[in-house]
Image (cartoon, rainbow, N blue to C red; front, side, top):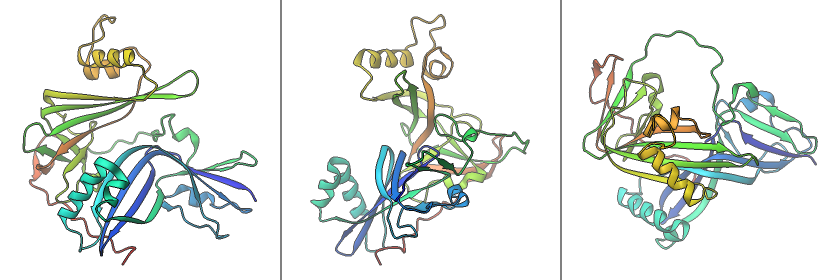
Length: 327
């Protein structure tokens, strides 16, 4: 039979959702990955052109011939959400689970009596299907609409009225962080990367009105906001900055990156630092993603683009317990 490989075309579009059971209580751990590949054997092509568009999400289960997709790789976990999945599970259960998971992953939660009884895998967004015997590739979205870093490319600009925005403001100091992800394509085809978590005493973030699905749920500990909408993050008074590097970046280069970001590049005429160094200086690093992380408590208000408040203290959605497996 033919071997078929299936991957998402966009980064951060592969999801692993694990279910942990403990005496009638249920907690899920949902992790997102930048890239993933699953494979299956089939004489028939497993997905049609229409299915590869994947407008509603695709669960990697069994196909028509009863063969199942098998995970080949899931690369670079980039987010993790832990939540209760039934009414028997208390906030205290979730908090204890989170602590054990952060400290010792599976072994930590198993020591508390939790067992991983089921795991589901999903892709969101357009997919790439490859016949590994012939090399033929089928795409849910044309290649020219996807950039090298795996993000959509705008194909046409249409003038639209300025949308309203949700303004998210922290209510306590030291509660906002600018998270930045940079990458570099090396001559040998490998990818190097570094991440920055730049913490500020005050600031604000925005979510466009038509992207209200990205607002936090009621009671969530963190809200995420964009950096390219609204009237500016107004980040003020940096108080901490943390760096994370891929293993291939040597200590000397790590220190140089830190110095350039925090103090400026002494070899450059303008000695730009911070965002100016990241986005305007001459180097071979590219932006992969950036966003704001705002810790609770925070206030969400719907505003016009000029700052006029339309609705203060927007009521956030409640996260309903899952009605799926197990019952």
